[in-house]
Length: 155
Image (cartoon, rainbow, N blue to C red; front, side, top):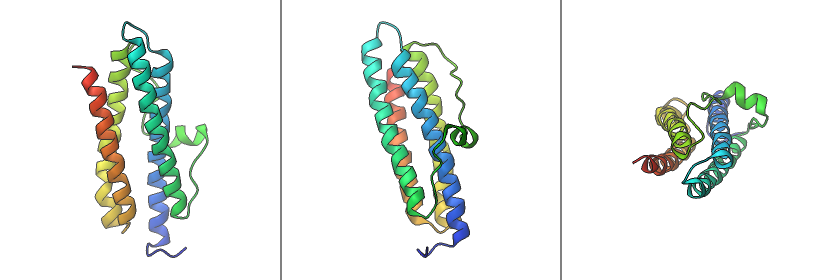
């Protein structure tokens, strides 16, 4: 494959994207958990809200996997791989209330935002992959909006 990026740089980018995909998958799973198990007076509105969020994460996961494939590598696709690669934890720190799930998910979104922000320039400058740099900038913006939505529920 010859797209103007050294093979070793493509491998490094693919690995970093695999970590990002694993983080997204874990956050998707935790958001599904919130959707299924939320309790309280605000059950219905939070149930629907978490559904909207996991649907966005599903699209993001697909985009990352396709980005990995477009640079000539295979995307991880097993639970074992995701758990080995993720920087997040499966463990929830809060209760099954709307606010409990919201706080937990917000912390993960913020962690992902920081990680994405740290890699934008690395992809462009170190790996000479402006396409992936731009791609994760868009992902960061999506997570910033999702975090804002979560944060707004806590006011």
